[in-house]
Image (cartoon, rainbow, N blue to C red; front, side, top):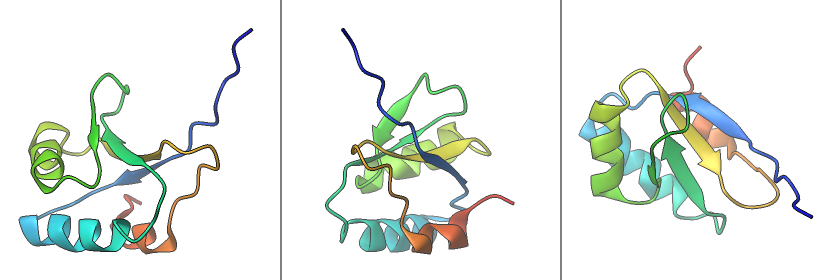
Length: 85
């Protein structure tokens, strides 16, 4: 028997390398595991990796999603600053 885990994600936009650094500096204070994935979830990187997030900023432009890989699906409130409206 398999169980499905909640898939909580937030559509975000990081516009510069400074945005990436600031975003990660805030995110590393949370113990949960986070990833950034593209729109169709076919590619995923560690959201706490500077090089990975910079790559995602260019490769997934306009379709970056922050995903909480932990069981609780918590998205920190600071992420609202980076959400696509």
